[in-house]
Amino acid sequence: MSNTPRFHGTWKGEVLEAIIVEGMETWQEIQKYTKLSNAAIKQALDELLDIKLLEKVGEAKYRVRDSETIEEYKDYYQKLAPKLEKPPPPKDLSLQSQKKPKVLTRLLDFSSKNKEENPAPPKNNDVPPPPPPSVYCKTCGIANSSDRNYCGECGESLSD
Picture (tube, rainbow, N blue to C red):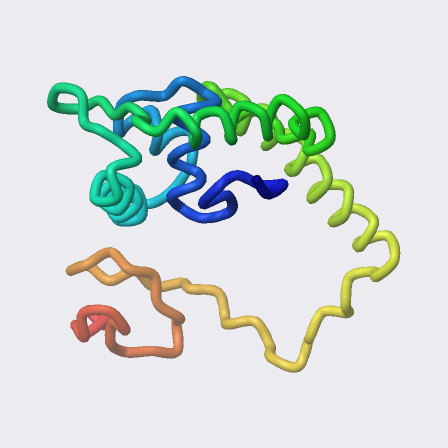
């Protein structure tokens, strides 16, 4: 018997780990634990069913048939799990939302350091500001400069 169980490090191995070590039975539980795509889980389950390592129990549950494979995975994870320090999958998304404030704080801190190191660039004063509007169009109500004789928005004459 080798150090690692059969299929370890593959999609099939992740599915077997979820079923044997974590006690997952349904497609949804396996997907949530492994984070594999639906196509990858389907392929792994189909291949494991084809080689008779798994059996389908009812409509939506799976069980490992081979006692040797069960022992391989249990022994491997009992002996090596403390060394691997594999964190358990998050139970819900609340853990991810707790990480966001830290990231935002870091981003804010980074931007404030950046501003201190790099002062604001001088403003470009090559373009003069537009003349203040003084005539309002009677048709559309848009303000236009006094040197125009038509509305820039609707084209109506401003001199009446």
